[in-house]
Image (tube, rainbow, N blue to C red; front, side, top):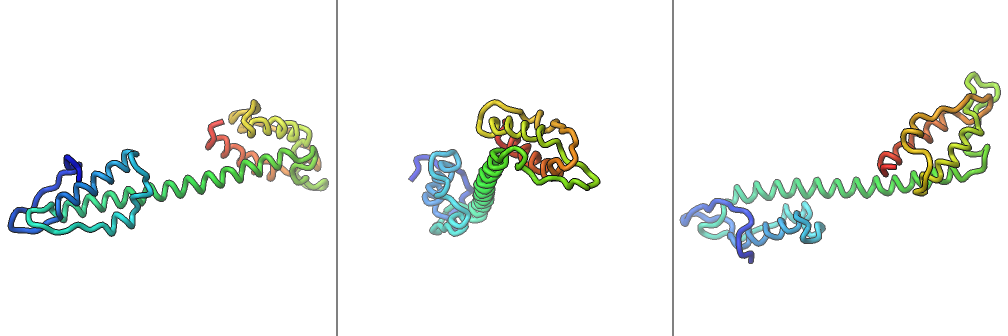
Length: 185
């Protein structure tokens, strides 16, 4: 039982029944401790909030007010649960993308990307320039010094017949920019 109620609810009066104040106060004290970081958030999930019940007693707390507060807490718990799932998914996706980028930059010179066709209307990017940039980029992706976000966004490569495919290199750079934004390189 908490020494002092965390949340004040109106009482329904001696002639009507409402939720038992001690149970409500204990529950809301626990919820408040969790929301302040004093306990494990996994202890409060939307299903648990939705299924909580309190004994009825004369002059108890207004069921309407307590239920409205529980609805708000349930929505907050759902939002936090979704955010944690999204963050976990993004983190896993981010790790996979970093690994893919590192695999691409570790490839041998001249083999990092598909080649533009020799007879094609559009030439590719100069392979030596792209390779040199990828080698510097590997340092950045591994936490070292290398090109920053601005350099990646503004890089321009010369054209070369049968060079690296522009579409593939541009898509690769888009992934790198996304990683750098999320990881604040």
